[in-house]
Length: 77
Image (cartoon, rainbow, N blue to C red; front, side):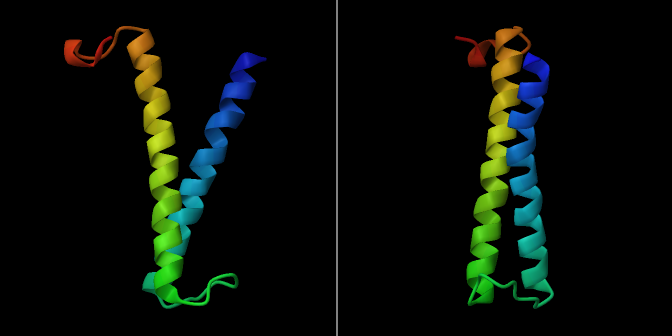
């Protein structure tokens, strides 16, 4: 049961990162999505979503590896 919960916790930021990539790609092709009035704002929100999702997934992996002593000595507590 705990693995399923962990999977759902990891899916939400991953989906946000994918949406962020899509928003940035749409801005490069000049496609304006509905809630955004400007292309630059769409790109900025997409970049923030992508960075948040990436940071969350990377932090989760780093935390898990630190718990299992699979990181370099300078990253261990």
